[in-house]
Length: 453
Image (cartoon, rainbow, N blue to C red; front, side, top):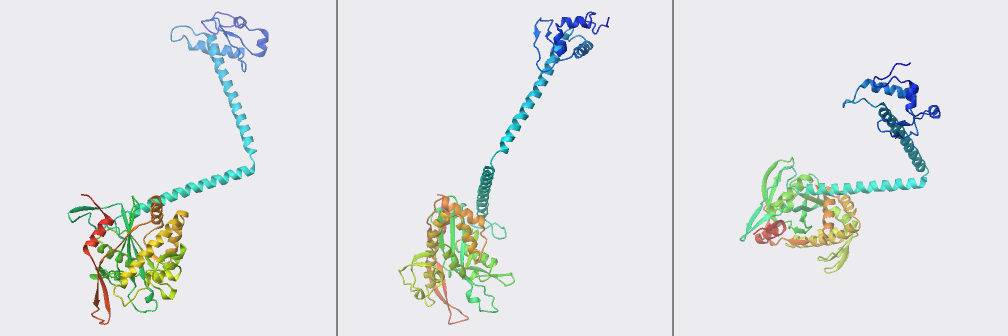
């Protein structure tokens, strides 16, 4: 007789144990067991995929017998332990079954993907590429717009120093506060042609056009101020080596001359323009040489105006409606009668008329094709000196379009033109313009300030 396996079991033989488990000869051969839980008398369901051998059952019983009584003081039921073990094996089997099924499904899906037509794959690839390009373009546009806006709204000069201006102004019993939403730039029309055949000269040119453009970045409202070139103002005098010498009251157009013909000249001109307008901040400048007028004019297909000045060389009479193309555009905004003291004022009127007509034609072109902005920017870069970036231009163009701006209000300073003889050259008479103080102050307040009382 075999040694008992568990002290809680009787000295039954293996054959008697198998009899208690209701095993038949057929099930022994197949390794399948119909187990009965002795504590309940209920049959344990057959397992369909795996079974335990007799030796595995006996080994399980032996392990449970070594664990001892349960925490409640009852002897472990070997039949229940066997059932639990069977269930663990049963779940393990199902796990393998499902894994196998998943692999089969993925294999089937992969097979379908491989059957996708080559043309379809190419079409999908092209669509994805176009989508990526569109997303990148949108991101780039909004990035340029944001950076352009942030740069324009700085109140600093070229050296990064804070600009000094009057935040509030008291005028005729009212208080006005500077509008921080306003951005402004100076447009300078530079004449350097007479220097082309002159040697050994320090004169680098003068500004025949001095125009300030102010844009409200919240509303898009745009206002333009034309300042006569002969306006008397304090101008900084610099040596050719860049050393500051003194400040002298002279014509505004000469501020550009006391510089290097490039950045320093532009900054000096902007500084003097700001002084004319009671020191309002002017963040940017655009200095265009006369040679650039025709290319820009023709870039939008020419500009149509009602002639305010006769151009005999082009058969143009006062009052004629004429489309300015090529050199005709330059002649219209540049020519003046040197024998007339008010000639520069008449030319300023023509320049303002031309700027408005140019804008009226350029805006629809931008609406039709936004890339017109970059095209104009690239064209002008060959003939200009500016601190306006393409980001700035993109922002301003999108701002005016989004706000539906199609026109702007213009101002020309009123005042008195006086003749003053040059003490060194008696035959030469200088024209000097003195702005009307009330007209000047009201213009500045209307463009740059907001009444707060």
